[in-house]
Length: 173
Image: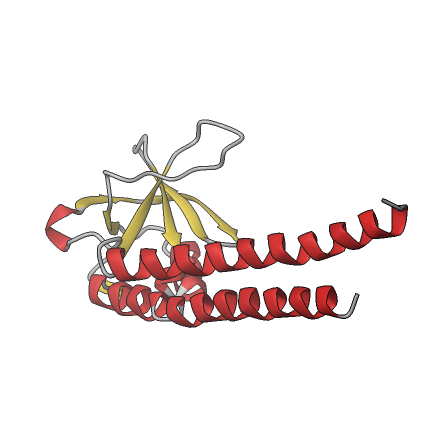
């Protein structure tokens, strides 16, 4: 067996491996969409209300993190619920006003590099004014999940394309 045939086999197997990976991700995304649709958004009755004055606000790529004075819990308003810039601006301008949030106590998130936990917020009121209601957050969350079938089809289609490309390369050898 010469070196060029070994190299050729590696190229063909690379196509097949990439095809398998794409197809796997496509099927995994489709499965999660079909089995978890709407289940990853908490019921309003399961959320906990907390009020206080804003102590700090920190914008990051996936939402707005903030803390309330006198609370040992830190919160995050996820960007998936839309309205990130409105929430950030409102929290920054809320000085002297009581902020009331509904948050999910059952599913804290945090970075893998430390033990800091943030609790997802799904409703924010500043004084009596609603900044983001539970219903608005839920509509945005569900709309974001509606992209999953298209992403799944993209991965599965990519897997089929790469598999066929590998077959063509092998046939032309």
